[in-house]
Image 1 (cartoon, rainbow, N blue to C red):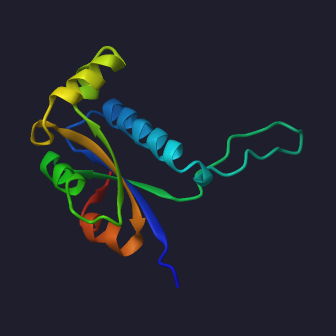
Image 2 (tube, rainbow, N blue to C red):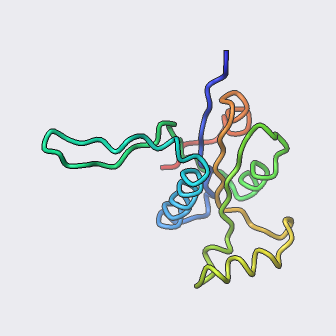
Length: 135
C-alpha cells in the first residue's frame, strides 16, 4: 500500500502576517507549477458560473524559528520535495534582482523564510510534527 502524501508550508516566525501570506502564495504557486494535477477541476455552480478548483492535497501552514526553517530546507531526506522562499524575495524590487542575487549567494548565505514540503506523510511529520500551526 502506498503511504499517503502530506504537504506543509513552514514559514519563519519572524515574518509579519503580510509577509507570511506572500510567502505562502509563492510556495503555492511553485507547488501548482510543479504538480498541476493537484489542482482539481473548476466546477460549475447551478447557474453555470465557473469557480476555481481547489488543491486536492490539504496544505497545513506551520510556523518555525528561522533556524528550524533552514534545517528543514537543508535536511537530507530525498523522498521529500521542497520549495523555498528566501529573504532575497523581500528585498528585491525586480525579479531579475532575485535571480542575480541568488546566483551570487552561496547556499550557506541564504536566509530561508519559508519552505514547502511534499512527500510521504510519515517523513514530512518527522520533520515538522513538533511545529505549531501558523496563527
